[in-house]
Length: 400
Image (cartoon, rainbow, N blue to C red; front, side, top):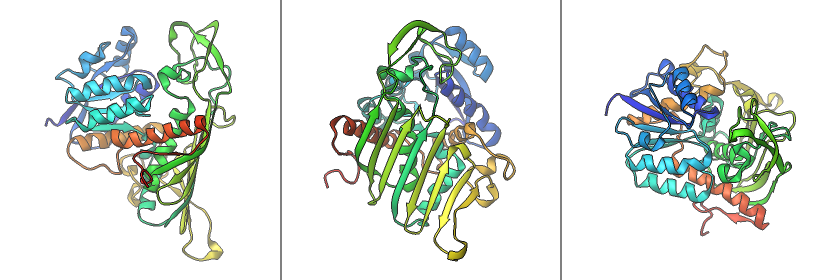
């Protein structure tokens, strides 16, 4: 293959910007083969799309996603659209022989996610899903620590993703519309921590129970023109009318792990005082780990080995490339800190590496992997609505 991958990005809002930045920066910090060429940005508004192309360095701007993803000029299609639009674009791109990277969750519905995974299994192109928190160096290091056996058997997992931008003043963005988003805080936030728990522990969530979903704010101000500004609606114009929110504001559930451990998950956009507290703790027979994205360069580690008199939580500053911290050697000197955008660049590097036939630094989620997270999401909703435990297809407990 050519040593250059022509990328087409679909979507120009907040996640489109995160992806565009990743493709623009990856060659400046990683020596990848192949490299990325920012070929075509696709979005709905012609003027906004042309301005995006100029700002972020894309060679072409288009409003026709189908013509772009089937073009012979494109090698990789990157989907950063609202959830309901993932399946059609991904399946078309796979059918045209393209590699496909897709934002999380894989889709707005389990049926769409299953169709995408089936298309991927039958296609020549590779697939990737932007569970970007895997590529935070502290999270990648946690994965390696657990894989080394340092925690032993996993007993407990507690995961929560707490945000507060979804208050009553936030308008009816697409993220509050079930036909577009699929779900609310659940698919947006629980998806991340479900993936993180699966990734770090190396185990599957085999069943869920005790699930609760709730919508606190049932009506929100309608947007003029149907488009919003930033994630919380900043800068958006609203009308005098109100519309119904058709997604959850919060979902909590319990789970059983394939290794026998117990897990709890909580996601909300109404946790006053928290802005992006993506946090989890993992407790095992020989030690424990804890992480909070609001302190993303740190990983907490409790090791039962050693002198009991000096035992306690150690805080690892995961910025030291020379000490083997994943991806840290590509960036700045020790303790200079990384941010949200760096995880996307780190993942873009491995996407290119894998397209070139190489191996990722840590496991990369493809459509089949992300489908399993989607199954857990659906099981939690089914459990909440049916008030019953739900066994998850594809897990080790199925058929047991």
